[in-house]
Length: 592
Image (cartoon, rainbow, N blue to C red):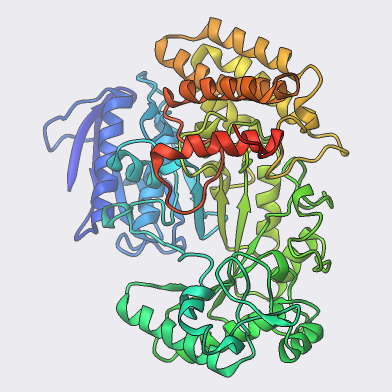
């Protein structure tokens, strides 16, 4: 295809050219380049045949680029024929085009339904352009609701590709270069169901404190029993035969402790110095058994809670990916430096697994033995989605540390359940930029987002964010995934009056009603702290009334969750459930 348009900054036509037979993603990339050039440069279509700057768009293979980028990487170059935007894959073409639009047109993709387009003549294109980028992580999953669910279906999918987001929350089709999806995480009970086998074969399930236990939230499987291996392997085969499009299949522990203590399992775990010993040997056996029939499939498992420490002897096979989970981490300090564990995990759930290594050591140890290495890291407060989380200036270093230690795939889990009043849009934007390149400046990313999203109110918003994060940066202050606002030291002292003053200034500076709405939504986080810290001087009935009124206000901003709720709850009942849970966590479970 060819589109010629007159750009103000060039005073000459621009030809966007996709040569030969193109994929749907390459055609879409060219269309987007034309669309944004018209908007940002104010050009119009001109007659064919005029001279102009030629922009060639396509995969490096189709454009016959000698030093082709890999996978999702891209190059942007200027040569004697014009500009080349080439990707290592169809997705890479899209990423290159959107990078060009951002860098040379000044456009910013802020949220699924909000873009900043300067509408002014930019500086002429440099005579020399030679940009080559490769994403830091091959798989990047940015699990913020505002990253891929807050707009229309079309806006969400388009925004995902504009921000290089992948995963199960992104409805990406061939036009967007396709998708990569990891399967569900806790699958032991699906692959060997307790409901089907426990009654007749309790020996298939974990021996815990001298008795066999079973269930997805109770205990694990006996991983040394040969029948369990046979059942799980056959169920994996059936799943892959029924879904030939799958490239990753999960064989992963249930979401609980209850690892098997039978003599055979205990012996292996003792040899390996970790409960991951039995797990990795079992998963390796499944992966080996299915490889001949499914050579392109990767078997996924977890290094999570009791299995987080790497085994001393056994390495995951080449067709196994390990997903390490950082649920114990401190949020307010870099992973590479902080040895403090989240206080909620100072004692393990079963009270007896005291064998955790240091998280940063475990992260490094798995990186030494894994061919494929995924990290599932957590970046919000799951018990209080509305509470300020002081981790914005930690994310970049954490991602760099993970990259240094061999992590190839990275999932950031934030508030993925509803719009967030705790800077969800800003967090989604920052996370996307750092997932691509953790070497970028956090200050620069936050400034460009706030300038585009909050306009004249950006100054006090940024000052507020710096205050929150500065309060928690002290070596003796640690933030966890479940901190109660009434106990968090970084929300004590003069936090509230200072925060309220910053938001007073932001309201005064808001450019228009749209920006004022965004400021008011962000201010909900401070209001939530004020109410919940105020429980100390309120009887339960008064606290309930204050929180209920806050919930009604939050609804007007599209907020449907104040804390994480598992499963598939009734949307109309979620906030009522949240209200009782939060009140009970402070006042106790007394009747209303």
